[in-house]
Amino acid sequence: MKRTLSTLDAFCLGVLLAAGYGARPARADIALTSEEVAARTRATSAALASRRADVLAAEAAVSEARIALWPRLAAAGFYARYSPISAPTLGNVVAAQSPGPVGPDNPSVAAPLRFPVLLNSVGVQLGLTLSASDYIFRFPHTIAAAKRTRDAAGAQGTAAEHNAWHDGRSLYYAWARAVLDKDVADVAVDQARAHLDFARSRQGAGTGLSTEVIRFESELASAELLQRKLADLIELLADQLRTSMHDSREDHYVIGETIDGSDDESVPIVFKDCYQSALSHRAELTSLSASMESEKEQAKATGALMYPHLEIYGLGLASNPNPRYLPMEDKFHLTWEVGARLSYSPNELAIGLSQSRQHKARAEGLNAQRQQMMEAIRDEVLAAVQARQESALALGAAKKGRALAEDSLRVRRSLVAEGRATYVDVIDAETELVRARFAEVDAKIDARLASIRLLRSMGTVE
Image (cartoon, rainbow, N blue to C red; front, side, top):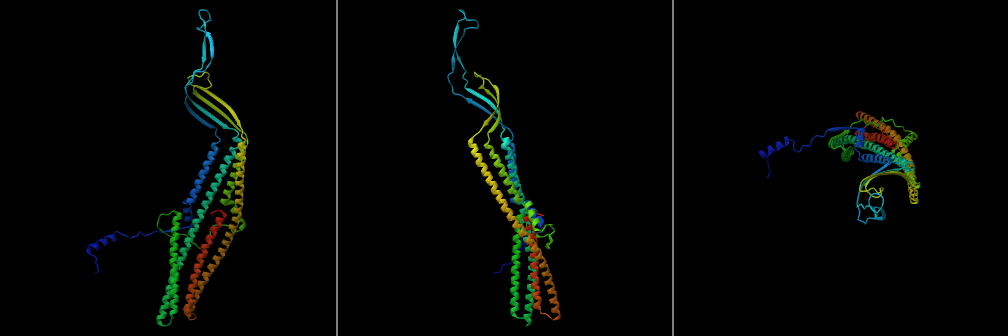
């Protein structure tokens, strides 16, 4: 039985529609530029945040190394309860029974000489120690090593910052390529529909063939498939842009800059200049150099174990009883002590030599890595320079190809109007123009990506 809406159902439906139930809010168009995407990607990069945390840790290590310069101050309080023992004696002492000379009225007596036994001990000790030899052989190198480690961490942070910037711009132009290709694909779909309609009208008039209809149906299906693939790709890349920028909005992104293939950034295209710039600005090389210098300084710092260790110290003691007062008294006494200690251990000599060799070996390994990276950077810069030059040539060829396709279409339409060409010639020219537009979009985007690749290889962002 067919069900009809009751008055109440119709009223409820009207209320829901009036309230906008189920309606999705319209998404605003947000114009994006490559610079904006790069800046927001860099500002919210988790990798960059991690590197900045490493820099803070390295700064703390430098502070720790400097604190080691301070004399070591130590304070301690103590209390002890001793087990009872018999009072020790040092023999007998002969003395008058009463004050005055010994005589019949004041005979001499023998009295035992005992030290008092105190069962409780309480006190406070304060010490100050200065490692004099470390100021010469160790501390300068540990501080220098910590600074070089900080420099290495800072260079890694710079590399992460540059990578985030270039990754943001590269992602933007990948998305822009899909958007521009989609615009061309939309034209291709409309064009294929027009071709199909024309072929069907000819077939209906008896002047066309069924094969023409099948051909244009296939052309329309291919164009619609490409259109759908590009729409999905745009959605995917737009989501990646939101993730990269950590943008929680669901706005619709549109291209906010003119992409004509020209690059306003003044980047040299001479290989020698680009390679020298890379050697000067690549943060990875700076990081390896700083790490290598840090290992060398640590090797010198461990060499301090090979020399005698000299300490200057001072102690203050306030205790009850004070062990320096004999016999012991049940009261507080304050005493002090200053001195110097010179110590040497053959074991530390062997340990110092071993640790020094370890750090020197690590420094040699880092130097080898740096040389290897310099060779890789040379190849990277050369490939980037060549890609930039080739992209410029490809862009020029693509622009000429598009202009030629437009002229060809205009000429063939004129010839059709004069009866000197057929509609098939016009369709072929339109198809060729679509291909030329796709090629021009690719050439424009490839030129921008080639510039980004060159800047990345040179270790700069502009």
